[in-house]
Length: 470
Image 1 (cartoon, rainbow, N blue to C red):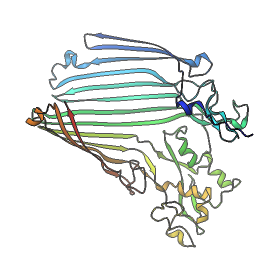
Image 2: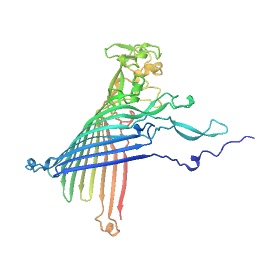
Image 3: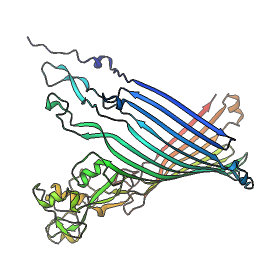
Image 4: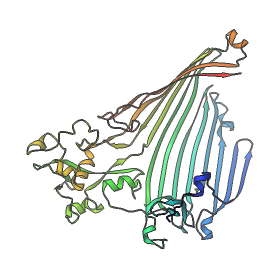
């Protein structure tokens, strides 16, 4: 007689899970103010958690901050500046931390049916090996800011900051035999502390009520920010070629999101890509053999073939909003800008499901290299020549783009008699459009806002709504 297990696992009946996270925290905050002009503040908190390794020093984390502020406009020497309503200088320094729930000192496994057995049996599927050395992710913060309010209705702030984050947590490839009795069941990736990065930047914000009266209002909001980042140390390593480095995101000595390329200058008369090192030496990439010296050099840092192209993370961002109120009508518009970064535009290849324009213009016979930089079909399907073409720095362009992110038009019918008689406190008709216009500031009109080289705009969305209160 043949029997089979048809009961299934418990979560297939109840569809519920259970977790037990234990935290013990203590927090204190002290503020001292003198003459409403000078103030000092301090805070400290101590956290303990069962989410970290068996070593007690990793379970325990004190975090603290110190701050000071000076209301400059309260000083006697500022009394003659009638146009200055408020001027406040402030600064702070401290540490904060972050925990992760994707890795524990114990093995994490999930109960599932093993379909490979007959009859099927309840089994444990390994999600994470035991990790006894995971540490808190910690950020050292310094901030210096100036708040102001001038004339009657203009206010804003300027902030300079630095942040140094150590023991950044992320997934990395590990030895699959670690922590597994059966090597075939070991996990090949684990959450580890693998990087240290530094960010510094400046932010400026402004809010102005240019006109403010009973029947007409006009206000503007402006935010501009500039951020620079640098990876100070990284513990995750791999081959030093654009395909690997672009995925890693953290490369020591470079900004977060660093992108790397080959200096590919075209094709030879056989349709093979030609790459150039930092000294101007030219090399023809015509093989993917792992024993070929050029192929090996294409994945080595010291070869001078792999060159930094820029960061893929915007270092400049800005937003400008305007709102105009006329009686019961108002109009709002928001423009967003992102800049200071690079993008790699996808290259035309005939193998794509939806080939881009020019994909059919690949090298076929000698002389085609004068009119195309797309290699021959053999090279397009070979790793080294293909990556020399696809990771060509000639197709790395400025990623700056601007989008008209939001336009809203609204009208309130609150003053109509039948609206009041019906008991409505508010009766508002609102029309909204998002992403009406997008432009990329490069020769392809390509922007990360669209996420597609084949599409030069973000798809607009339109909403018409009726909002009421009784």
